[in-house]
Image (cartoon, rainbow, N blue to C red; front, side, top):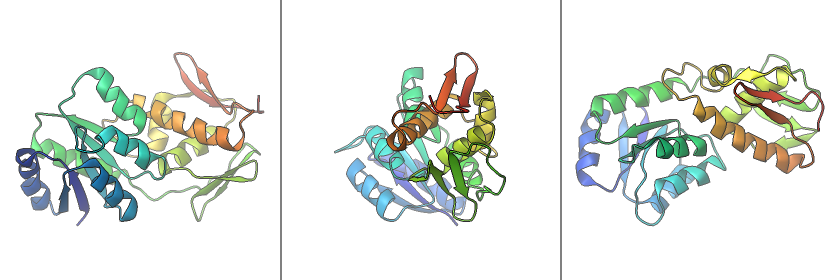
Length: 227
């Protein structure tokens, strides 16, 4: 049984999902505002959060941004904002999936199971090629030039894939496979959001170097030597 946090201030939507999630074997907790949800996720994170965007006090996008600064907690966005720009915004911030209202409760349950299946144990035992980056295969930690990096799981997987072959250009599809194991329907643009966050964290440790390079129309590569 997985503990699911349902953050939705609309009673009808919440009741629509509560039964199917419980029937699928999940324990469900419901909250109705963004501040309470953020506190719950950071203090005692459930297995996954279903998060509405329009919420009292702070909205769902603010919740995602603050959570992603500290953890890789899985989040599926539930929203009536169906425009492509809104979906891309959610992925850029680090959402694992994005479901537009109105939706089928069975589809939401299926997406929950898909995201939970991606949470395979990290295997960082395969070596790294860039001397600037080091990994601890047992603890799942990473260092850049000897300084610890506070990375989420997805950022860690992306850094491992890129740094093992400096100079090689990785397509978004290949990085999607590396960072989202067993992914079925995650948009490749989700990679861009995690790369953006990874770049920011690398820059905090090594501000004068551009470690991850964009290759227009193709993807990303890791610098063989710092710029």
